[in-house]
Amino acid sequence: MQKLGLLLALALLPCCRSVTGERPADTPSFELSLSAPTVSLAAGGSVEIAAQVTAAAGCTDAKSANVTVTAPSSVTVTGVTPPAGRAAGGTNVTISGTGFQSGATVTFGGAAATNVVRVGATSITATTPAHAVGTVNVVVTNPDSSSGTGNNAFTYVAQQFDPNNDGVIDPADIFYLVNYLFTGGPAPIGPAGMLSGDANGDGVVDPADIFYLVNYLFTGGPAPMAVPAQPRSAAAPISGSVTLGDAVVRNGRTFVPVIVTASPMPHALSLRVRVDGPAEVVAIRRVGAARDVEPIFETSRRTNDGIGYLVSFAGEALAGTVAELEIAAAPGAVVELDLDPSVTMLTDQRGMRKSTVGNGLLRLGGTMLGRGRAVPKPDHLQN
Ligand SMILES: [Ca+2]
Ligand SMILES: [Ca+2]
Image 1 (tube, rainbow, N blue to C red):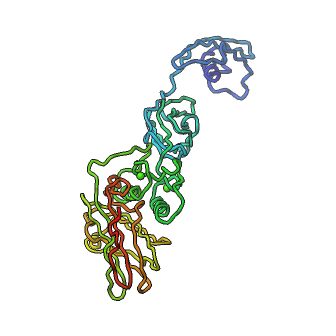
Image 2: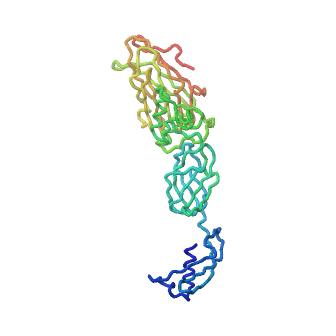
């Protein structure tokens, strides 16, 4: 404002040649007085400022002019994508609006966002800061102090799938869940605790969540749930059985078939075999149609008393004898093989429809080895 007034005064001093135009080195001193050296105006406001200059030579002049303040750029925040993220922060978002200037800063519920990048006047990308669960205002503030607010534009949620709590969803989360469910590893430790492992949002953590995650990461399926779990009922439930057949001996090695019957045909199988007796599971291998179809995902883990196995297919492969367990047993030993009802299941490709002992849609059957030959277990079919 003072600079503006000075320029105004200099331009309006025709009687004082020594202070017009280019100011010569020997310009005598002069005094400038403004009627309003400091004013505060709202956008669009105006004020009349009178300026008087008195030069040392004794000549004076006074003029006045209206000063109108131009409104600063209008800043608005119209949306945040995605509109929700976990309370721990770290969600990469795009903020839409108008009037964003270079150097703008962003806050979520008063906490500063990081990695703020102005893409253009209508778009900013940023990473959310940590914040308590709830809905917050998102504020964009320009370097000229103009700002815009998106009221309740972002929601911090407690549940976000991330079993290993490293802030990203990737295959490491698959193996974290495999380790937890099959080999006694630590439970999910994400922001929602145990439910940080609930990818399909059904309120429990089981192998169906692994298949849901595989489908998301490898075949472009829907992202893991970020909202509180909702029990859901399957419109077309899968029901069926997983049974271990009679052992067969080939070339001195013992094999036990894994037999699946189900309708409609599932796309994913999870099982854990538990061995009771002087024997161990050496390996599990796909056979039959399951051997000829490339799986989307397959992994097995030896456990202290057996083996865990997961496989999922895009096509139809899980019918009949789908795999064989190779068993190493002491000659003549009596060995019982059972399927663990807590993690043995059949699901669709997304892990949304499942057949489990728990939901009453899956029947399991174990088997028994003895005296060097396979003999049917008396209670061949469990459950
Ligand atoms: Ca993770
Ligand atoms: Ca689940």
